[in-house]
Length: 222
Image (cartoon, rainbow, N blue to C red; front, side):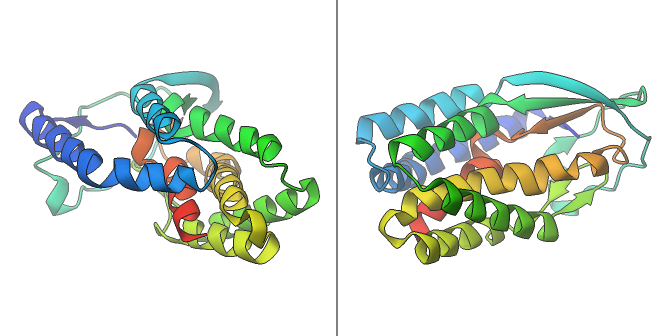
């Protein structure tokens, strides 16, 4: 469920995230995707496109859903997030975020062909990672699907190193990205019905979503 951020806290959040990107993420990002054969310029272009795409949600379809009582916010988020009263009409719109879902998934399919990953090995890795993501993910009413942050990247990196050590980075990115998409999003659509939210955006946190960051971190670990 989306929550509105107060203007002052939004400014602070954007400032902190900008510093984080400038000091840490850009450098780590280019290092990670250098391992995938991308130049620094290409890696930065991919990051910029992901950031810009994080504000775009593409509607896919609607599902019948049940109303659910919203869970109280943790105390450390109460000053940052506001929860506007929104009537629930009995349907949840499923959407795909461009920056957090469409771009990383498209790049995964690009890697499947450009890195010449073995088809059967890739399917096995994606299937295993999806199973792990499904097992560790849990629906949180009013918030979304939650999963321990490092589970998917560690799983993807280990699968890449074990199944295809000579191309571990590419396989880790592909199975990590698609594993989260399938295991923690698509297979959890049935749980969305009971969360009482008007919008469920796959990759809805954009560049900082689990789908995007899983592939990125998995490459660094592989």
